[in-house]
Length: 458
Image 1 (tube, rainbow, N blue to C red):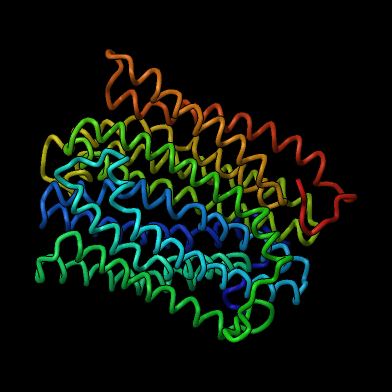
Image 2: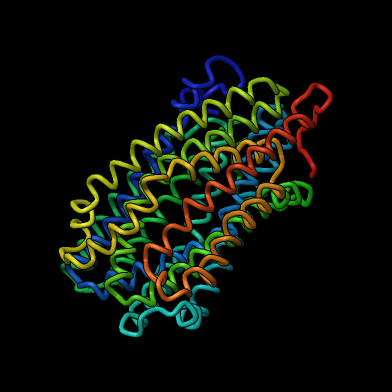
């Protein structure tokens, strides 16, 4: 590992090193959202509200189709960090090569699903008829770059596991600048509309994948990637699946619940869809800032668990929660305070802005609750427990949201956007309470000298 990018997670100040780890990751996530926002702003400003709604109506679906495989990269991150902390070079090398080949298979599969299934899935989501053709076109072109997206996600997960969040930031910056330039060229100069935005995204994703692969091939030690040695280790694949599949399944079902919510929003027409899309994009900046501490908690906990530094894991959880609460409260409420001005960047329509403000008020004000929940999940996954938080999240968040839409939302006097959005803070509160109880039980069982295992089976 290039020492100037490495962070020693197993000794010294937890809070200081977590901030050192999380800030580049936060910048990466926010930059990625800025570049995604550029897609929406360019489309909204130069191609109209229907094009904006077409791009926005795909967000929940893209997350639904990709989250399972992005979850597998969490498994790669945890296993890589545990072997790195335990200084098991051979196991580390096998994990890296298995992960990168898995990313290729995942990307190809997603591309096929996106190309073939786009029209039918969007119809099932009740995408407004006036934007359906544009939405299908956007989705199909977007998914042509899905293999590159998976390669970047798995490669950056490996780098995060050993403490490197800076180089993924640099690669994302380069790819993002290309994305913005191509957006402007394809949409304004070539008049390609949503097709131009999707093509720019696919091309920039390919660049970021190339850069992260080149980085890994130039590394030394256990994370060195030798392309001719790409192979699946059945043992490492099983362990990646044990952590990654529950994480991915949880993300997929979360996205499924969001698809149901998106369908509920779609029922209010294209103005509501456009406002929801713009607000969700703004909201994403707050979420990704908090998510940096979720990712930091996973990597720090995994390395310290592999190194048997169990007492530090409690310090890691406290530091992660402290950081995520401050981040969520400050940024979430700033998003609401400046919401109208921010939404005006996406669309000049007063109706779209009003619809977007409904979402921001209900979700961003209490967004810290979501961050607290995620950090607890990160600590559980870091010690090898992934099935339990998956079950808790699915029942406590997804299940309750679906019940809410099927019952309360259907009552005529409560059939409104506000009723849709208030389901978020209610389910966050219930779910994080159960996660806290779960962590206390797991910690009593696992975080003790007798529990010296590199990988915990549930």
